[in-house]
Image 1 (cartoon, rainbow, N blue to C red):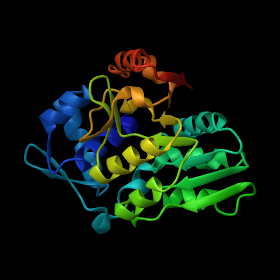
Image 2: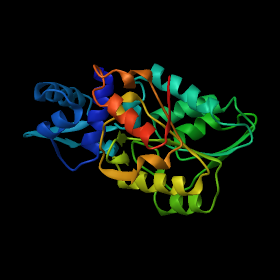
Image 3: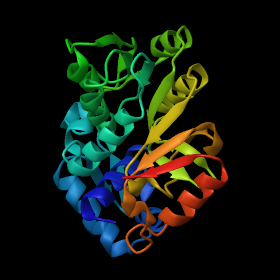
Image 4: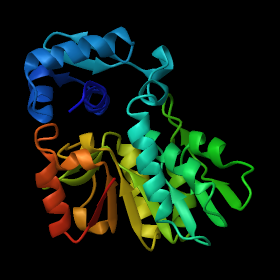
Length: 261
């Protein structure tokens, strides 16, 4: 796993817990405790975590300006490739629910050329990408904007999703695990994804290969609820992603079409 990818997953694991230990991060990421300490030091220098004895705690993005903006540049080329592949699976005329996340912003960029489409977004960044684009009917799902993430969550977002029907839900994900299924680091994000799954005729999940084998805090759903999963080809390389091949096998066994780009 590359350094930027590992930092991304480490940050999400810390943000998903009140406190996480070096030993737990080492076990989840499959790297040495010395590597974990170096990564936590790097994240602390960026103001994204606070080091405590034996581990780390998350820093409020409202205080330090972290979150989405800090992760956005990481693996941008890979995420753009994933975004293009996902957009190619969306048929003109569909009603699409587009999840929040750094990868789905790239999906939004490529969806702009797939119109006519009706796209409901759960991200203020995705809304900015799709606003005023010819052939795109944009619906911004109501809700509370999570500080630092600008994802739309909470009761208002859930009520809006539950009142609509979608041809497709494009779901980003924090973790995909052979036993734990699809999972997220935030309870609020997990609840929004569960609502999206229930209201869509099909679901395309998308995540870079670092999310394979990750068991995040809140389970969203079993593997088999998703129709297609788009990830980068590095997921098949056990040398860089030890949990990748096993997780891909579990997805295929669950009936999920996996697309590697």
